Length: 365
Image 1 (spheres, helix red, strand yellow):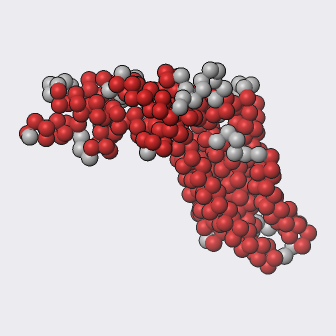
Image 2 (cartoon, rainbow, N blue to C red):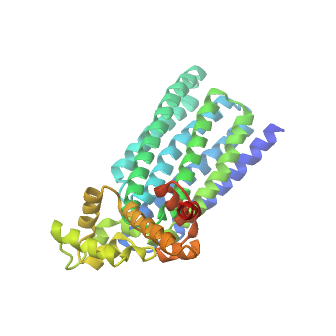
Image 3 (cartoon, rainbow, N blue to C red):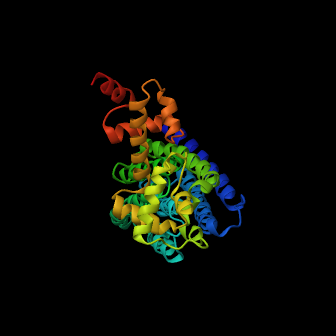
């Protein structure tokens, strides 16, 4: 039973990855400079899917051959996983940092699994030594474990920087638009760990579970990666800051003038504009966005999002106090929130209680 299911799972995975590799290669991407690295990474991903399709086809040939060896099949799985670890990490990080992957980075990531693949072919087809293959497997397994740790560290580092950029540009929770990127990475990490365990416990059941997990993941990953263009225009200002910083006639104000300008802006309640960004504020004050962001970080001791939310919640508290009959949803909209849920989350984060409870406590006192 397991033999047949394993065979079917490998066929489905090979066909799926072959089809998506063609999609990544031939579906068009707008010819704009901001998407240059994204176009490059689409080719990397096409390469990753093609490798997976070819190696799974090779694995199918071995599985149906007279000299089938489960350990050899597991070694192939490890090679595939090592390639995928590099390519998937590069592809996902590129979505949050378009300048992350350079040709040198790509070559460095591809070299170790390529050398292990070459050694595998030499041992399998020329040396014919099962003992050498097993020892090589242990060495590759140790390398792969270190590779997973390194790429996880890199992704978490880049993800943290990305969130900082989001919070210093947007006033609301725009990071949810790209939440699938984290889901995809940690799903890929889980599959990578499964590949590592399959090396330690090589069974046909574990191989079948691995193939099914890969089939689901690579479908989810491909669909979301191809749809990235639909969210790119939202994050373009922070993904490509060099393009946005070519403002004309926006010289930095002096520290004193900027403090006064921000004070006037707060009095005008500019923070109540829904979806306001730091570029909007910089334009309103006729100053440079980078200078303004640095000033807020240093003198307000918080990022742009925290600063705007602090102002909004203080305004909401004033409305809750002065207008006890005003519905919570109207207060949320008045102070600048597009979604009531976000207002409630930010209010609780800053005050430690909900808007309704805060109003009740105020009335009881």
